[in-house]
Picture (cartoon, helix red, strand yellow):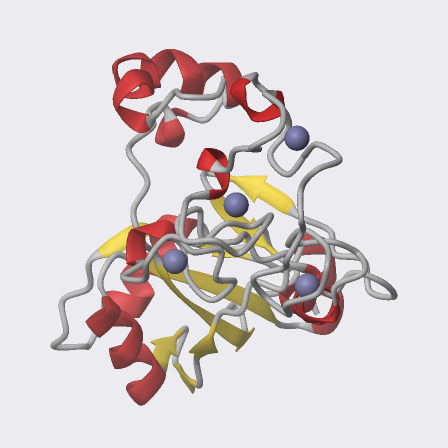
Length: 233
Ligand SMILES: [Zn+2]
Ligand SMILES: [Zn+2]
Ligand SMILES: [Zn+2]
Ligand SMILES: [Zn+2]
């Protein structure tokens, strides 16, 4: 609902979580969003690929074992590759989500030790569509990390997209879909300067960044984590 924020929703987090994930005791809660630093172990090899995949708890214990570094986890590690495929190819990728950048840097620098093997780790790239920063419309960061002046996704003016108004009609006074606009609007894309709103299929910056077109991205959701087609390979 427009206008609702984490502050409004947080008191009802248990109810909301149970609606989505009735079976998963581990996720029976919801919390305010925060920045996650994600890394991927591309070639994680389970001890016995014909057995069920080691659980998140086992993965976490493995990663923590034998290292001096103390990790701050945003979520337990998860397999991004479906079990059937791991069984087939003998390895799969594992997503690590940390709440601190230093943890990400640590694993990128040192790799991890998993089931007796030293493995390389790379930065997780979410190949899903970027969401523009709700303050400045940048596709490179979210509003939580924004230090820019506001910019409008319709006219590129120095105001929030949600505060765009028309001098000739009251279209924007009523509730409307994010980038809907009246016929008077002089569109100027904040990404390319073209005469369209941001995230338009006519925008070359957006089509390049969003991967709109040939490659379709399938998203899998669970516990706030996103796996992308790219990292399932
Ligand atoms: Zn921004
Ligand atoms: Zn505007
Ligand atoms: Zn108007
Ligand atoms: Zn554009």
